Length: 430
Length: 164
Image 1 (cartoon, rainbow over the protein chains, first blue to last red):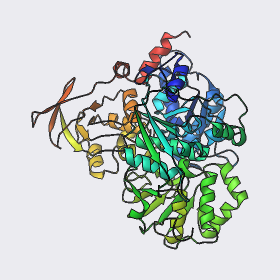
Image 2 (tube, chains in turn red, green):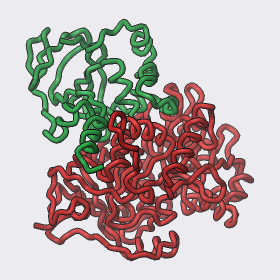
Image 3 (cartoon, one colour):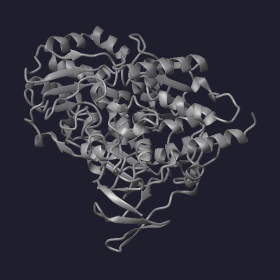
Image 4 (cartoon, rainbow over the protein chains, first blue to last red):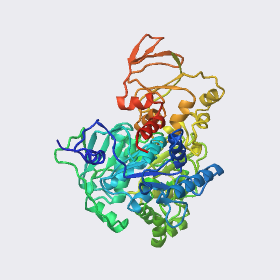
């Protein structure tokens, strides 16, 4: 019986010839990522060993990644102390893939993992962050787990009691129009299936629009798959995956392209054509409250945010800089730009994008999660409205339950920054 | 038997249960104070200890969606609240199991604030209406984690069973 990509990955990792949906397996983990919540993982990890008379021992320090991104630099003594605790743990256990608060190799965890070639096709990747789904863009089965579960992974090297998720095949055909792209596609899909439409499922992406999409765009799709409730989103590895790993990530080792069997069993198939897709906006306060941009154009915006693990990569900044070059951010709004990593920041500097942003009046911040989850910078005032390229718009998400957040693509964010209201980038000569 | 102290809609996120700005607080002993913090009145009642342990929060579909923050499960456990939801988002469900927090998945639950619910092994009875709502059991492998007292105890046992 044929298997989907995730079924093949889990069969290999569980050391069994085949698995099928809903079976419970115990896959070995190839990469285990945490960020600041590593502080809780450390606490739980030590708890496991209490009373055992055994030394806490990490199963494989080379397979653990810890990246500081949620609150960088620290916004409070509490966070700084968590950072300090994690640094000491990293040194003590020899954890190799550690990215501290640095201007040369820092950034958001979901950017660092692909950027450094840590994620490859066929891997099982777990992370104490729901957007760990991002790494399915490189053909890995990547999913979010909690801190206690991560402590178990650190101790045993396996993920316990994983239910093989049924797979939904998403076939995307057609070609995107100008100023429409991956973000619009995933918002459209989430609106169509709802915030829980893929709960306990995997979204496996196929079709000509996916094959011709860059890894950066695929990262957007996989990243936001969790907003439809999906355990993971995955793009089967292809030439583009290999190009990204070789040319951009500098990975030189073997690449095992895991592809689905022709007779793989899918729970359902969703077919989409992007040829007529228009810019999509997720309206307050749920990510599945998605509308064509026409429904909300003219809405006044006080804060524009470009960045996050969803849309803070170089191509995102390029799109926005091109629209903003020589223009000004409206006086009624403020614009914050967060490159997703220091590498991207450097590349944007070299390409002149940072100058374009600053000359337009945008504030360019250091790489990190920034205001996306309302814990560090860029909080909203009461009754203020934000338009962001981030991934969630839950009530209170940007730190204030009395504010509203709309989600969009970088092109929409940039065009709207100039006018101060939600603006369709296809109109007005952008 | 527990009284319904709050009735919630669909897609209640972990940002709602435990706002991101308190995420630097990680220890299960410290998280209970921030439970549903943006729902000021409810949080105030929790902190004043006027909500008895075992009180019920009834929710519609997709409870606990969004962030993987485990604090959302530990804050509910710390306040000894019982969640009865029509469906539960994956990571939150797993976190709850791992912390030994028993969630009730009850796809047809119909109850109002103030109702008394009798939570039985395979159903929830609304004492006011007399209606019986079947619950969905967890797979045995997952129930075993709750029965072991949570994932830490479960993993500790695995380590002790392995060769040193």
